[in-house]
Image 1 (cartoon, helix red, strand yellow):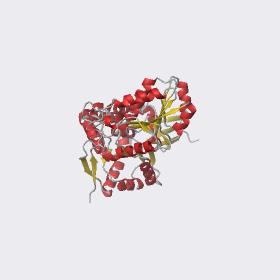
Image 2 (cartoon, one colour; image 1 turned 120 degrees about the vertical axis):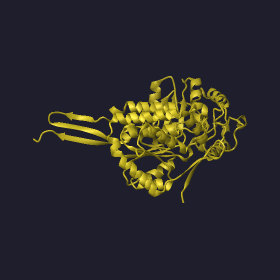
Image 3 (cartoon, helix red, strand yellow; image 1 turned 180 degrees about the vertical axis):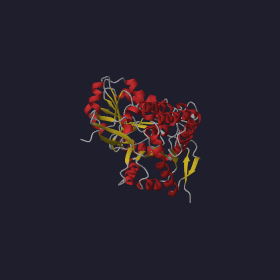
Image 4 (cartoon, one colour; image 1 turned 90 degrees about the horizontal axis):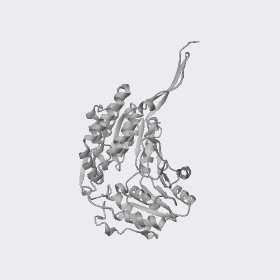
Length: 462
């Protein structure tokens, strides 16, 4: 019996889309087509692959109105924010710009006797398992360099944003990328694991939960396929005594609440120097109270529903547990009448929190943030590192040297100063600890989807 995969809209709880999942036999045939198509795709000139990828993204831009509406229905982001096209276009442009240099051979010697160099070759078939929270951006991070480098790509998108894969495939195929070179598929977990274990793919990029990443690693064990994992996060902000207070409040609270807090690098805990703590909390509360929770299609809504009511239930549990353990909730949910006890969740700020509380240790991935006072840098560094995760940290100070020194001691993938919740395509996107491993974007992003190949060419026989 065919398994149907459904997207339940958080806007009104209805089945918004459903598609049949491939059987194992159908999935194996799909993977075989990707494998067969790869050599011819890699044989095309680099400039041709770049042009086709950029044309695919241009076609996607032509779908903007439909894409923005579909995103609101699928995962609840207010339409006023207009989708993810800025980041999609910037990342595509940058990775296209650096492709030739990133993929160029490293020449060791070019003499009368020898030519010795290290080339970069595509790994083969790249499998992207994409998340729902920033469904276009997270896919583009790997899709663009993988195709440009000469790989074929299979995309399995999250059930919550199942139409994203269809739109990407539609756009890229319309631009001229062959259908077998880039395939969007619907797969069950067991078929996915069987394909990975059966060596269908040469590189697997997964963005999702820690448990999901562990499952991918187990499935790939013994296949020697490369694995890139971006998993959980509990990203901290630290407001130092010399910080611009208003700028820190505005950026950190936006980093905590934008997209209903459903950001991989969203701010989930904030540490404020004791001299600024009271003022920061007061301004943060005012900032959050100005948000408007509501239907994502209403232009005044700045906060939509969480993507699924079960995600909101977890955040409610963390808040309730923290309050029961002594935390103080500063936002009255009654200020947000759209909170329906389901996917629509009022934002919350918690004080009197500590690291024994789940809300300060486990990923929330929702519109809640805990704020703690610290007396100095040492206490802040210890608090920031007291986490199983390490994706980004946000440091607020007027002194870049101080930020760099503290950043060197924080266990994280990216150090921000006076900003947060941002991805720079010129810098690699990476993490440590339970956040995962691997690197996306930048020149290192190309290294993830290629392999080195050494050439030792002797021009003489003696």
